[in-house]
Length: 110
Image (tube, rainbow, N blue to C red; front, side, top):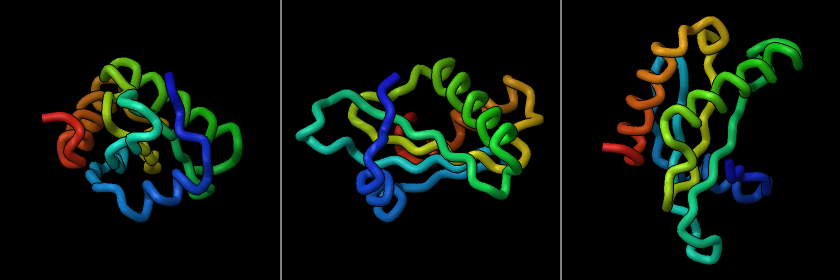
């Protein structure tokens, strides 16, 4: 899975990206810069509000698997998946539904 790693690109995504949120996840999307090619990239974010490093890493793993099941990364888009507090205890089907809804709101999927 191609990931977004440069801090400047992540900051730009958070400043200019289109947002779509649910109670489990926030999705930010922006069109991939042309110099990067048509392949999309993803970044997984779990803030310190989530808890310690173990909990944050678990949340990112859960998001990574949900993105894989949903067909990510999405061509032509840079996408940030931001975990909310409930994501660690959510059922996979519930998370998949929330991700689809967030992607729709952020303009990535129809």
